[in-house]
Length: 428
Image (tube, rainbow, N blue to C red; front, side, top):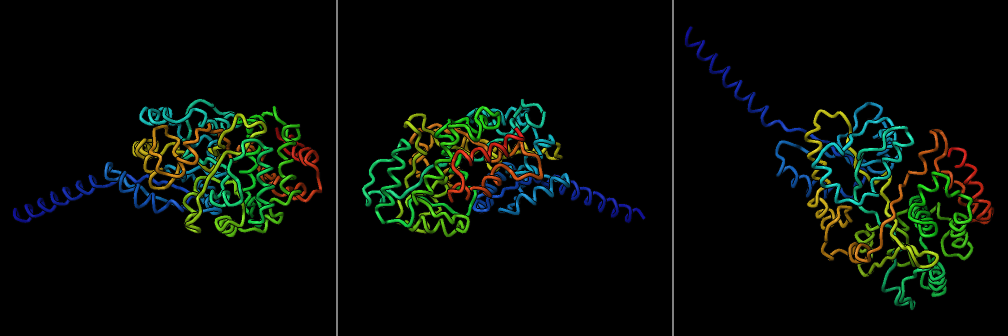
């Protein structure tokens, strides 16, 4: 009998040891959700091993869902109270998460704040504005920008030399002269690339509005300091009529698929396109002979020029509140806001970090955009929708649906501005 007891004791001790060992090896999982599937392999193959090598007790779990399904997925997870630990802000669900106070205030974590001190202060504006309009406290930090989407006017340097363009335009008059020259050269189907991608059209809107009115145009429109039919905004709408009346762009832009437009520009069927830094990676793959150059959208007098940097609803990382793995979650946030993460972002993915440090000028993103030294005017993509209650067309949807009235000449710039202000003003 003693022998049986000894065997049972040994089995118990072995089981306890194995169980304890298993518990020690169990890792805390932190889920990261991102909609930009083009960076999935970089995150999985490069960044995940780097982080987990230094943090062997944490396992990164990635969920990538591309447009347009990502917003629906986040909305369902928000409704189920099952948000990812860290996720890229995507449209309506992220705004709801902010409005319902479901996101973590990062200002209470010293390691995170030590990193965020290396970010420009003005980039933290968007979540604060959302919380203000939800009657929540504006103090604290509820997210951090992913990377700089410095939008500009892109062109091929070789083609510009061929058609006799040697100087990038600085004033609006010089810009119109450039488009006229591109059109007259006969080298392009159209001077400006537009397509069935409302982001492309509204990226253009922010560039023009910022150049004509100022870097803080989005908040001024929300407050009513600038009305959508005020004289300075009518000049913005006139931009669209000038583009249309002079034949600088295809007016059937709603029928143009984005992929075809991208290929057409890379193959030099358009003179310029208004986009962001990812072009430095995508277009040379289509046309290896292209030598991209870029400049900020010109201003009326050539002064106060700046890049338009989108740090709004699609370019923020946020962390959910009340997660069981908060300690691990914050270690991931510290890593994602660090100088090392910023270095890899630039060198591996050709993205410009907001983290302020000196970067080697080996990337065309740096040499063509960052090194030119223009300040960044942050605009929030979805910011102007904050005042509009659910069930109504958003600011961008309303303009997108009615823009043909302007480009087809059915309404003047003033009449169009009056219509947009009548719609938006009822919610202001």
